Length: 115
Image (cartoon, rainbow, N blue to C red; front, side, top):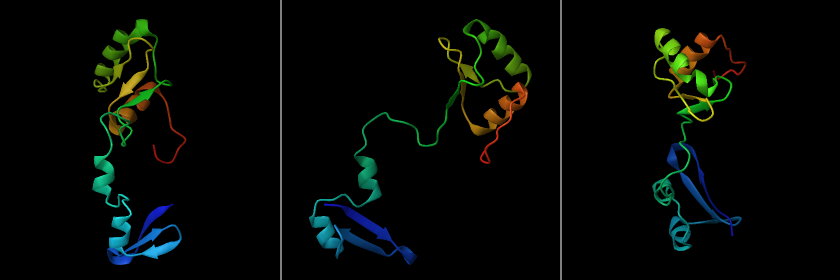
């Protein structure tokens, strides 16, 4: 049976079990988790960071033999906190501002509106 909560204006909640509207007490008695804190509390350790950072970039990767040279160049250009995966050479970028600086240093541009 599908359980859902519809959030309306002014924080009003409407509870549904299947297609039938029920009270909060009936919804709670069904054993369904209905608080975000409860849902977040059930997650185990690990998982993917919801923010997406640090980001791994294959496009801005270097050959593993060039990692030290890339680190020196990044430091000289003011992008010193970028790290590289020693096995694949992928750039490990800690945040959006660093990504923007690294893209400028590499001569890259982003075609997406959110860059």
